[in-house]
Image 1 (spheres, helix red, strand yellow):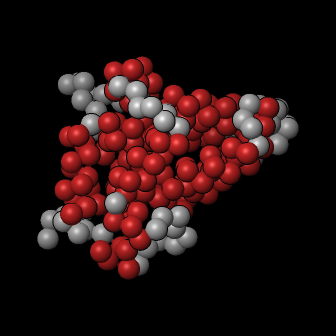
Image 2: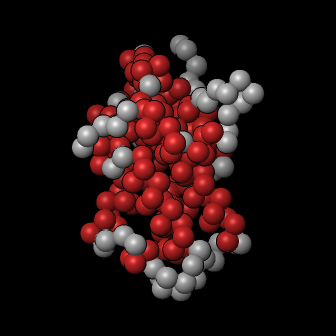
Image 3: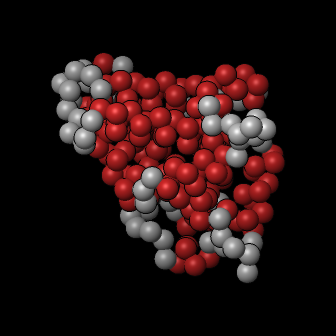
Length: 195
C-alpha cells in the first residue's frame, strides 16, 4: 500500500479537529484515554460486537437504548482511529510510545494480559506495530468509509452487506478488535507512572 502524505490525510481528521483545545493542540493519547473513560476494554469490545450485529440484519435492530447510543459509539470509534493515525504519522507521538515501551512498563501485563486478547506477546510489547499494521491494511480514508457504512447500516433498515463485501466482514472486525486491544495497552503504557 502506498503511504499518503500526512497533509493529504488531514482532511480526514475531522473528529479530532472538533476536539482541539484553545491552542489548536490535539493529544492522541488523551483521545485514547478518553475513549476508555466510557468503559473498560471488555465493555468496548462488547459494544463493537453489538453495533456490528445491528448492522448485519436487514431491518432496524438496535436494542441498546436509543439510536444515539450507536451513533455515539461510532463517533468515538472514528475519533480513536484518527488518533491512532496521528500517532503512526508523527515522529513526536511515535517516539513517545516507543520510549515508554522501552522502559518495560508492560512486562507485568505481558505475563498477565487481559483475556481474551487478540494480540501476540510481541504485539503487547510493541503496540505501535498493531497501529501500523491497521493502517497498512486500509488507509485512514477507507477505515472512515467502512466505519460510516457500518454505522449507517446499524441505524437503518438495510444490512451492511449492501456496502461491504462479505469477505471483508471478518477482517474489519478482526482489525478493530486488535486496535481496541492495542489502544487499551497504549493507554496503560502512556499513563503508567515512572518507577
